[in-house]
Length: 193
Image 1: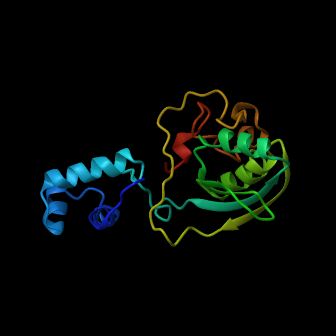
Image 2 (image 1 turned 120 degrees about the horizontal axis):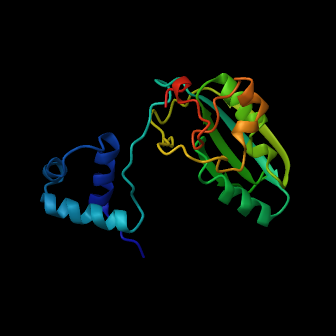
């Protein structure tokens, strides 16, 4: 049983406002020592309740978004899809659903052309085992203001994590897509990330 008490909740709340606040400041705000804050932080991180990470403001970077609702043919196909796309740098959110559709994905792209290619050519909706999918182009999220967008530093892959081959893709060749951020084909100079 995981213990997550009121002080733990307050620590998380403070960190959500400012993830770089000094531990000693958190301690003063809560009336406990910085050592007690560190112990609590370690405990809730070790129990996988909290992960401290950098979030990005997509509005400033003018990123484009789409939401995809999909239905795969069976449970094994769903598990394969989830595993295949867990390292996709453009997937912001991917989860199974219990409804008419059995998964939802939210994707981000550097510009409108890339977004159109992501949802039409190298889209999760084209994955083997997909029976149907609906794509909705959405505005930049209002809430939350900052989101967990994967920033890829190592761009050495030949193929993208989902198996697409950017170097042979017609959209890439015709300069309608800048490639997958995980691959050596990514045209970094044309992207804000």
